[in-house]
Image (cartoon, rainbow, N blue to C red; front, side, top):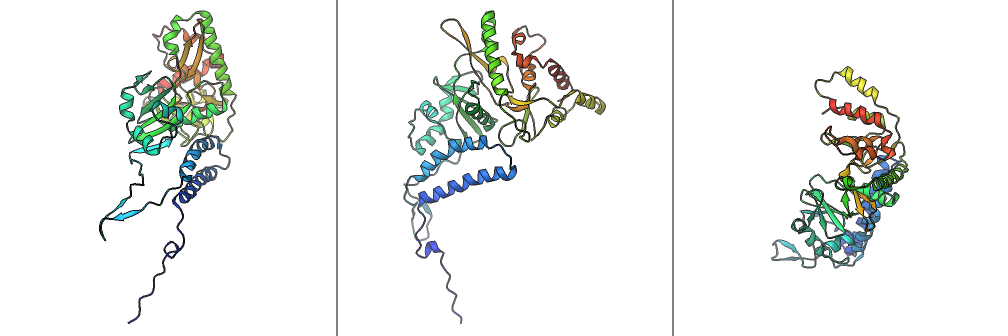
Length: 383
């Protein structure tokens, strides 16, 4: 009878020193970071890496700090020779229902009554209590936006998307003249997502406009003009997808209901998207005529996407002056044709609207009257 061959043990079992847990974590983090950059470049060698690098600059340091902390290897103990295994008390397994896309920054942690150096377990425990905490917070413009104190707000819901975080981060870094909330973190509990950001103090233009003097209104108009001009000075590179700044690079049209499509790489493709779902009564010939009315040579610019009076926040100073303290709700923002903000700003105006704010739109938007009229026609012929 032949002797059974001797099975060679892996090096880790043959006397080789095992890799310390913290070193293994560092290796894993570096591989994941490299993979993210490599995937973006393989997808498009000319990809704009601004957003990805900005994300990494926020995510990498705290993860590296955690990975660098020396920890004893996770030891397993047996209840019996062949019994079930369990983790030692020294290990910590994050709750499966919690997904941290962007760790809360110190300002957000403070709003959650946590210290900047709180342990991950303490942070996770407090995030798991977030739904109950928001019930005690101050509801703001919408029931899905709640203030946690004077400095932080949380926007939450099943449809909240990280793309809003990316555009606010991009503007904070590249266009400080635009006053937008600063993103402070993004997490998910089950199917509900939570976006932390700084609170923009003040009241909506919608609520204050009737009380403003001619001089105050002119100052608001000039302030908006300065912000829009600064946004439009940001350079769009041909070949960059229109719409959101991060994957999946979609365009959004929320005039009737939210329609999405993309990626699109030029205005002609964007125009086809606007007309892709016509009403049954619209003939193909009429559809072609409408498409011929849509220009495809506009400049592509950074766009808010929902610039209506409810999303413009004003602050009244003690001396009676009024200033624009910020623009909120960037969920529909991104790279779009230069007329798009004018279309969206006027979209909510009904035939019975007596407000005269529309007469004081910044010049940057008021030059696209023809495009607004054509898009009203498009809107009436599509679903």
